[in-house]
Length: 283
Image (cartoon, rainbow, N blue to C red; front, top):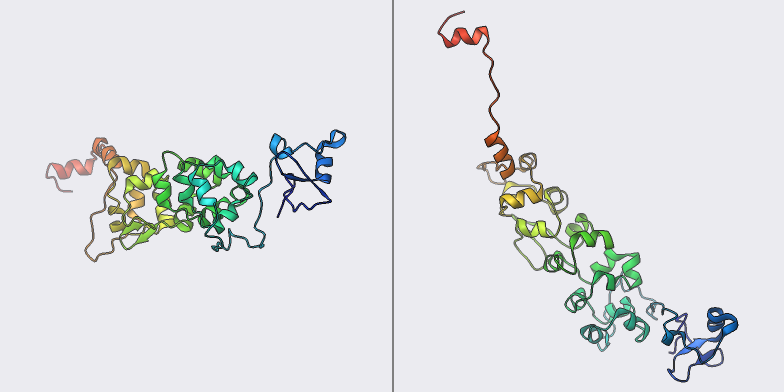
């Protein structure tokens, strides 16, 4: 089906122009609306770059963000991404939107492994209007965020660009405690340094990941630096209950231990009563 290079709707002979050199189609009404009195039927707005092609939507009416079914295993979407084809070109020249790509089996790894950035993803409409759900459908996990935290998926930018919160990372994309260990889809023992790297702190683990016991906290193997970055305080630790019958010693974060070490004991001012007892005098 031929589509108008301006409005992306079906273009049929009689109501549309087939530009001779490039073979693109445009509705005469769309050309008239775009060019006005300067209309030139040889003029192709798509080729000159004076119009940005709208992202096409699936013809079957299915919402592939909500219902990501695989319908076309022979599609060229993955091939285009492997060739690092610009997103604008995928949309404009190949008539593929994000939902088409999902229907062809494209997942988040296909974008990340080929170096596509958050700005590239934002060229898809669904990434602008409902990024959390779109990324979930593409299969984003905390493992991806950890792997690309220093480059393509910097946690602060994820929050600013896509509105991804600590609650999303834990509850939506799958980071939670299973027994004593913090786990995700491809990682069965997260440690504190990794938690810090994806932008989470102690309160996030307690609110959204299910951190509730001392054993779970100790399994993170936090270093003094990790404790500081996690913003873990003695108050947090006191809220965690040991699972085992035998009580575990309550660890005190390194920063608080140092403060206690160098804080002098309170000065005791002797009273008449304490002086009598000190010298063995009876009341």
